[in-house]
Length: 266
Image (cartoon, rainbow, N blue to C red):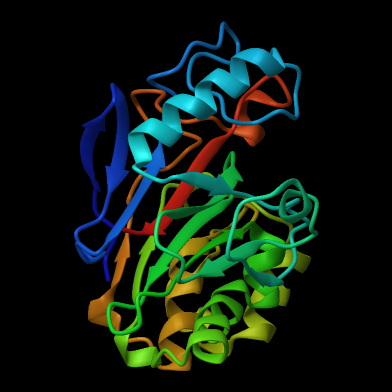
């Protein structure tokens, strides 16, 4: 599916970007910088603890997100740029310490979340079983097959069928701005030959290659059996968004915050 803007909806004064591809039985959203109380340079809805924001303010921002999400609680993991997807039935400190880059569940009211600042947040819903998943995919995770791992986790854990899955790929650094070394581009081409012909790798004379992470993820999902019409893709680039709505590690360095992508079964 060609990228296009997601719809902005406000809940508890927090703007959330949402996709119509996700069925009504699920709550989901992708945050922006707006709606929180963090001070510059973390202003304002910083949801990450990594880079120096006041932890009390970050915790307050998370309470705002929880109220906006409609979830009873919001689970997260210690992201490591891998492909492990953890099945959870409740939020806990033990879950938050687990090294993984995805969460899946069919527990009503349990929010599943990932933190990003240029990497791709992906949410997946299965309307037949009520199961859902959230994935964190930077370039390393994307290359390693995070999209494939997320889809198959739902199949293995909950008996989902790939053709039933609905996928929303949220804002991340776009191909306009994601410049990589030649060795990274070559690795993408070798891992998925269709990438060379799907405008995933953009090569221009005299420039470093550019990678379209979202298009690559779409190709991975489709190659596994997810229907193209069941995949929705945000067109927003976290690096060059004209409104400055997103945190970007590549643009701002470690004086920036983190966004969240989340999903829950209602």
